[in-house]
Image (cartoon, rainbow, N blue to C red; front, side, top):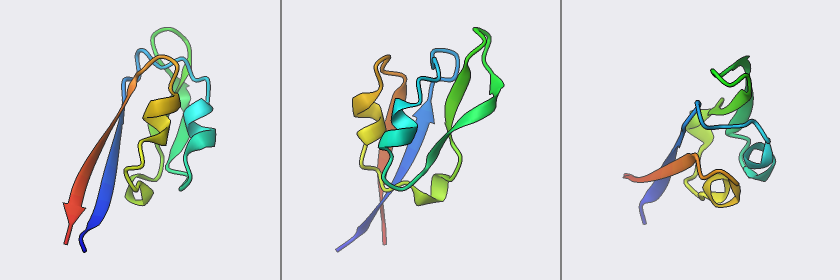
Length: 75
């Protein structure tokens, strides 16, 4: 059985930094950036991209729909 590896892409300019995705992530992949976007919000980003399992919990709970999760089979 192949393993699944995930990749999280966050639209930084549209993210409002509500932190719901950070709390929901079971592997602690996401965190809030210390930098701000053009609107002045601390945006979410993949702090530990290697730990992503592709569950897409973050994308489901994001109120603004700014997160996309990709899944790749790893042999």
